[in-house]
Length: 159
Length: 410
Image (cartoon, rainbow over all chains, first blue to last red; front, side, top):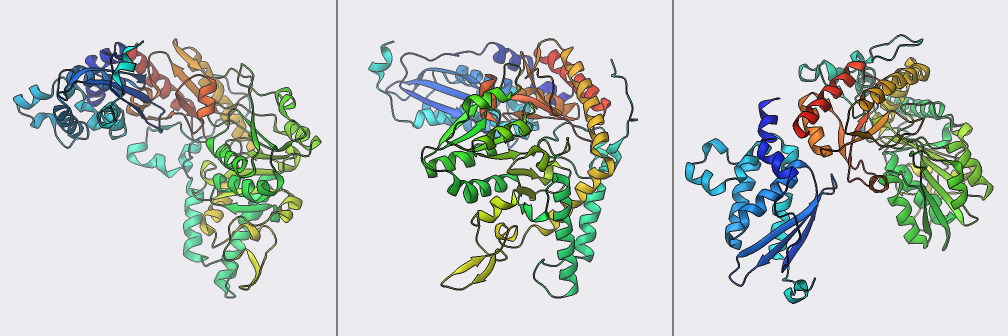
């Protein structure tokens, strides 16, 4: 296997693809958004529960997609649980720079790596420009969910 | 494992295509011809020669160069006429591609043939370009779209059309060969059936024309479209065959230069077909290039092309069927050289990325045929499509890549 392919399909990515974390619609949920890539038909829905302090108290997702998009969504939910909305936006910016190759993983300080981990496992995507959208679809959908008007949570709590 | 050769010896057409002589593409297994084909030297060289020695606007100038260009352009129309088996070259309209051709029919023919409550019949396996123009027509004319489903094996039978067709059917728009799974539709019988109720048949021949001989008179269709870039010709050029009597009764699609007889601010009268439907300066060099692509195919001959591609297709299907956890969409007896596959463990995009690393180019996704994908209950597929330049080696390379996919994804 070529190095770049090896980097792309690391075991941790394959694992998140096979067993995506937080792969469910959460209850309660007060923000959600649907993301769709018309080119490949991949789809993802991100569910959020933001508390009054603008913190992501809970996050989940479901959908259909390639290994990169499912793993990226799964890693994103793990990373963002308990983070504030501004932190989430900032992490997306750093993540975006990483997968588009604007930031090189090897240029990151240990502190920065620590701050971003485990999202850095997706840095191999930067070698595959056609796959950047797969890695960022869940994140774009997350932002859409944050920016969407809040859903009435009472209704959500009734199953 | 190799399928034994029967009569025609294997010829290597790969050498005719300069793209494969580039260092980085020397080992490229290009298996995405259904999307667009590569271009042979013969087409490229002749297009350049035309630009260098015979180019001017057509149907305009009195000077020699313009006459020369007009001759070449009209010769291309004639080549397309013979290629499609039309009875006169006035039945051939040059368009920017099949999409424009279908939209032309939907407007110029559809607007007057279809009225409120009428029906337009499509097959389940159409490309979006043979769905959306009819939906738009349906909205304009308040007509109903009806869809004919395939058999469980993904083939189509005439009976399914017979069940849906009615006296209100005005247009049947169908593909000749499905672009995503390769089903071949019984176009000739469908035309006979349609004409019994006075409906017109529009055939999307984009995936048929590169692989099987097309004869619009034998098929008996009213309209037939093809595109140049899937036929080893340039992009931006396509052709529409329309039955002469229908073309003559149709109003223009686009207005502009060349499509008129006379223009005043009070009234404009229109030229006869095909000029009536070719507003503005045509894609002159594109048309000439498509003519040369047809010459190239005719020199090889469809007997040889079909034999070559059938042999490859059989080998491909056989090798694919040996892979566990891999499903071929559709198990019809006859198909065009287009095969869609699903692997249990891997998504089409992941498959295509790994295959790319093996120097194998395939298409991943819904292939502009979302209703087809829905029928198979998949989001997308990995599509392998064959062309003249492919060989057994390309298929072996594909299989190696697929084995690698299995290694990564299990």
